[in-house]
Image 1 (cartoon, helix red, strand yellow):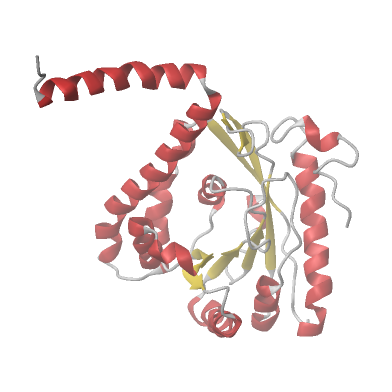
Image 2 (cartoon, rainbow, N blue to C red; image 1 turned 180 degrees about the horizontal axis):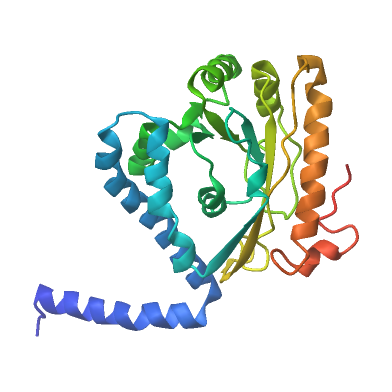
Length: 285
């Protein structure tokens, strides 16, 4: 006897109702993929809601407040406690360049928790084509750079330096240039430091503790946990020249790495793996 198409659909739906909870409770890997899929999908959905509101102003850095307001709740959905320290180090009334370590897409949670006013990230140009999220970021004034075309990137950075001074804007840069899942920090690219020196504005380092106690892409693990975000004192650049940039970048990275190790092993973020001599948390400088 043939079954009606509707019956097949019902059987398929019942099978999903059985399989999904089974995978959720029995497979940590499946739970990881479900959580990451929801994380990315939810951000795309929130971006759809944000676009009409942001479009009223057009492309404007003030729209970043709307995105921040809509994204702040995500940490509660995943049971992640974000603790911010040192927020008083933000200069109150001048442009500056924020530099932060980059571990995963979860950095968005820490960024939204501490994001200062009139501050926008510098992002790779590919994000502009990420559907609703790309459009929402464009409306919020996010600065897109094509890293494959060095000439274009330098030109954009020069424009950003002028924007910092003329429009009282702050920018957020991940100087590692890519996500680092190894529980340490990659060598810093120098674009953010050239930008700060060119504009003669301070650099504000921000360090997010390791996610390794609750998130690990390699192990397909994503649970609840705590993350500490530490804002460090601003580093002045007045009087510095392009020749000073390499030493400046190394000095800032060293101070950030020291704090990263500290807050990733104090019970408020990260795991004990950082304490092991020669481990991934102790790269050679």
